Image (cartoon, rainbow, N blue to C red; front, side, top):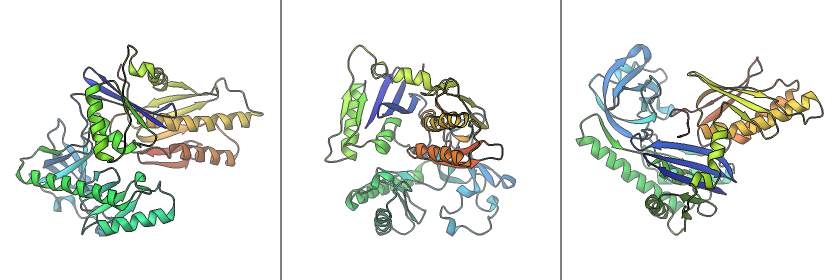
Length: 395
């Protein structure tokens, strides 16, 4: 069971997602600082840098956006030239084009943009120019993967591309077709607006933080949404009813003197989980350090002494650490390069088991990630897609 909570404070909104009572996601959005990821913008090329195979595009922000050549070439790898041309042959200063933001501006870097357009719906991701069909890797059964693949091929037209999302598992073709029709309308509206608008201008913004969570995560059979703002609760209910016709979503308005996050003990979890030093249930602990280049997580036995031997104690602490850090990576929305310094293990089998535990624990993370394995120094390497600054708790 998932429980989604939304706290509407003065000038900000906070959301928390609990799975079986455990906090797994948190996000906060200032009212005046809505994110740009997913937005479509008509921009203007400011300069082209052949040596970097990149261009900088004015999208109306303080810093120009970065557009790499791979994001200009055809989105289908099979339709790209074997040798990349100079970006100067593809883009010229002053040229106007539609781009989509894939990464927020972080620190001194401007936003990252692409021309590989995608519009996410409830069941599918619509890619108007990609020319292929893919199925979520989290759908494991081959017969269902084949059914969805064939359905996608049947539904798409010409250069359209589709990704069948994990929630499309066992979904009927009519609902998926309706989702596609709605996304086609959105794309047509974006193109029509782009014809008449002067750059730089926002053509389309992705859903709000709350709506994205509902679209991507909410299941009417098992989940509930709890909000402490009646007006937004009404809007959320209307959104869910439109997205899930025939279902009866559970949207609850929290009332009473105790604040929402205090009533459901979310606040103590947040305070504990965003510390530099995080204690594990068995007595070990993690030390979490984030630099501009990467995040380093150090595992320590601490007060844990429950094993039959030193190797067993270390192994059990590392297993527990792998399980917990997967939750914390998702909760903190940690992105980029992540290096984990597990406690040294003598057994190759134990190292393999710890890596497998981490992979299993990360399987519920919707953000793209890759666990690369062990280095010669005994560190574990992984990467996770970074689209915005790492989460911090609004105090």
